[in-house]
Length: 219
Image 1 (tube, rainbow, N blue to C red):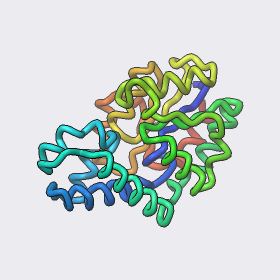
Image 2: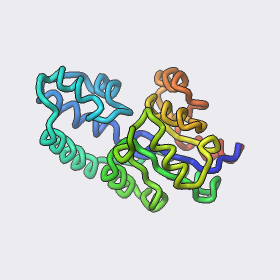
Image 3: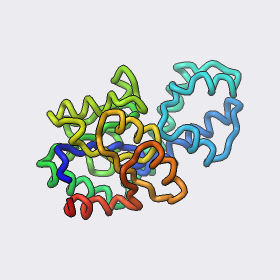
Image 4: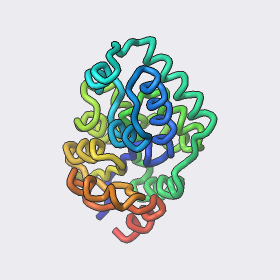
C-alpha cells in the first residue's frame, strides 16, 4: 500500500528514551514514597504523561503533585537524556525510507512535551528530517490515546488520515493512531508485548525498525 504520509511517535520508536525517563521517574516517586521495580514503572507509565496520572501518584505517595516536583522531574530527566540518549537501531534508515515513500510528508507526533521531543531528535541527529512537522500532545486538547496529535500532524501534511501510516510502540499510542483512522504498525522488539499492541489495533508488528524500509518498498 502507498501511504500519503507517515507519522512517527518519538519515545521508544525513534529514540531509546523510555528506560532513561522512567528510571528518573521511578527514583523521584520512590523518594516521595511510591516504591516500584523498573519494570512496574515502565508498565504503568509508558505511553502516558505524568500529569495524567496525578490522582494515582498522589494516592500512592500521599503528597500533592506540585509544579515544583514536576520541575525537578523535568530537569533531572533532561540531564539524563542529554548525557545518555541513543537512537533506536534502524530508525535513521526508517525515517529516510519514509521520506522517500511519501515525498517528504512525514511528521513526529509525540505525547511528550515539545522541548523534550526537539531536544531528543537533535541529540540523535534526526531533527533535520522533522523541522516544522513536530507535534506535541501537551499542546492538544487531549493527548494519546485520543487521536488529536495524529489528526493535527495529518492536517499539517495535507494528508487524509485514512491514508496515513502511524509508527507506534505503546498501546495508548496505537489506540490514538487507530482512533485517527490511520494504519498503525507497532515497533515491538519484545515478543511478549505483541498481544497487547495487536489488541489495541496495530495492523502489523515490527521486530526491528530496520524492517520498515523493506515493507514500504514491497508496498
